[in-house]
Image (cartoon, rainbow, N blue to C red; front, side, top):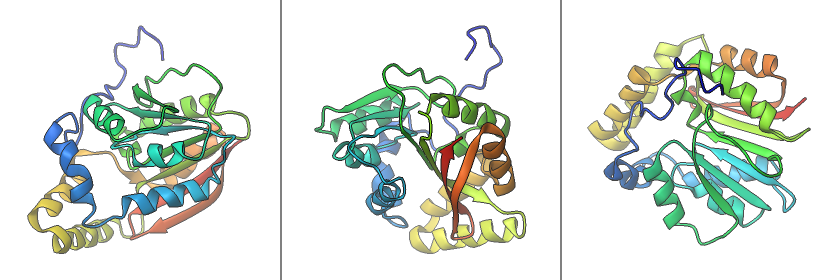
Length: 230
């Protein structure tokens, strides 16, 4: 990005949960395990992108580093990218492989050195950007990705048929699973973060130059896209 863009969105400013706090980072996997199997999700991503020993992976919003650790057992190198230093320190403390580079950056600020990634993943972090900046981020990812490379995106992405009903149903489900803690977590997501419609993401991916190979919806509010660079 241009160094003189004083109006650029501050992607390092935490929205929703403050993952700059050690207490929030420590609670991430235990709290999410109430309604997700994070390792299973990461293995599914690895399967979807058909990760191999020839691949270089850049994982944006790497969080606690589960995907990065699993991928590092398979591919040539992993770049684990996150805007939270606290998350990165935690992820690094859990890793024993030396083929992971931990990068304190985000979609708008990451600068790459070395061979281009052949695979880029984004798992439940893209909603931290407002829609305009999602478009800028996708342009940067497209430029970063190697020719014919793969991009996998999974996030809270809504269709416009019954979004209020789907959100309410999700919040009710979270409440049953984890009481007030998960209810407040879900409510703050939709109140403070930047989840958007699937037709917005569809359009941004197409305009950026990504071909959507596969798109799946889960639980009414989650969408997963497997894309190729064209």
